[in-house]
Structure formats: C-alpha cells, structure tokens
Image (cartoon, rainbow over all chains, first blue to last red; front, side, top):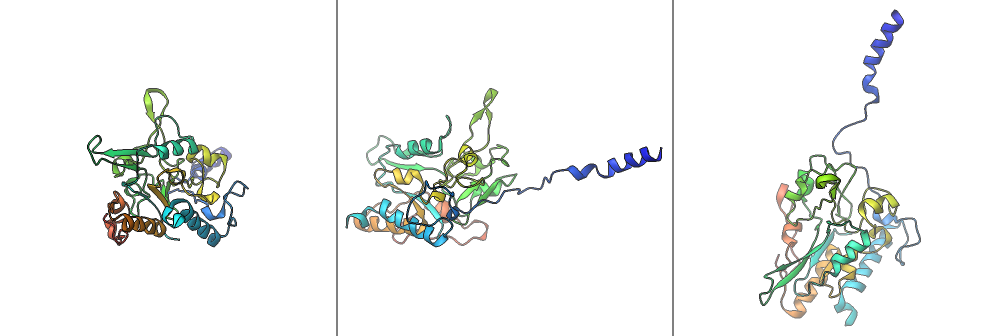
Length: 73
Length: 210
C-alpha cells in the first residue's frame, strides 16, 4: 500500500520532468557564413573560416561582377 | 563588414525576370512561391519603370517585430532569416512586410498554408551550412560558398545590386554621377532608413534620393 502510494505521489511530482521547454524565441543559432560549408564547391580566393579573407573576397567579387564602370574604365 | 543590402536600379531594369528565374532555379523554390518578382510601375505608359522586389533584409524588420513565435533572427551581416521549425505559418509577417516578401506555399488539402518562405539573401537558414537539410528548407547557402545572391549575379543589366551596403551605395552613386539621373532608389528608405523603435536612420547614398 505504501509502495503504491509513493509511486502515485512520485509520478505526480515528476510528471513535468519530461516536459520540453516551450519558451518563445527558441531560434537556433545559425553558423556564420564565413565559416564556409566545409566542401570544395566554393568560390576561390578565400579560406573557409577566415572572416577577413571572406569579406575581402566578397567585396572584390562585387566590384568584379557588379560594377561595370570599374571593369570597363 | 557593413550590412548586406539590395538595391534595384530602375534605370537599368528591363523586366526580363532573369532574377526571378535564377532564384527559383537555384533554390528549387516550389510552385506558387516567388521569393523575388519584378514589378512594373505605369505599365504601358511611356517612361514606365520596373523594379525587382524581394525581402530587403530591413534594418528594423517589421516581420521580426510582429512574429508571435519569434522565428526570425538577424545574422552578423544583417541578413534577416527565419527558422521554419519554429514558424507556425500564421501570416502576420506577410501583413507587416512593406515589400510583400513572405510567401506561403499551399500544402495539403484545401490549400492549407504552409511554413513561410522568403528570400534568404542566399544565406540559407539555421541548419548546418551547405547541408541537405538547409537546402531543402531554405535553398542554397551561397554566402557560405563565398558567393553573392544569384539574382544579382545573374542580372543581365546589373540593375540589381547585392552585397556589402557600402559597396552597393558606391556602385550606385558612381552610376548616378555618370548618367546624371536615376537617383531614386525605391525601397531604400523604407528598408534601411527606418527610424522606428528609436533606431538611428540610415542615410541614402550621397546624391541619391530615397
């Protein structure tokens, strides 16, 4: 009787222990783009994981690909 | 690095829809969803103008403000992304967005609204960079591949410019000074010049009206 009672009490007390958190703002952290994909199918001229080289490569790519004045003059 | 930004130069856009097609192809966007589209103002009237519109990754994004489940987040580069595992497809963001960027695929019977889908600035989502899961939910992560958004890179007239905000502004300023017109950049003030929530306004490029 005691055992059954204690099981019943414990099951009530521990009922919420398996509950998953439901807090708002559960946005998982995204990996920074400069860290790369770890694959070889990437643009050349930068090192994956190196923020500075990633930024300078993107800026150079912008000038080369989108600024036709600088390309033609 | 400054914030990532889009600009569409209305003097150059020829309404070819190359950006729309490139985006759909690159990310294998489903039927009924267009992350980017071309809008023509005064269609058929002499002097009509076209602009390519998608999520502008606003400085003070209204979609982030209204989302009841807080599924949006902003990367270090200023790209506004969202987590589809958290999104409940309520559609509040679609009402809040001044650019009509959020899209909802019809899923299941009776066209039940699915998870929100929008332009990611080709930066994927919260999944591991370049993973299959990321591609299936958000499309290709070109930024992590050291590339720029496909819509801008594929633009035949270079009307659509994407990338570091400072470089974007420099390119457009140079064009405006050379041709002596076309300083109006639609959407710049709305997306990047907002003074809501006490944030400092972001000035349009010098010589450029927003």
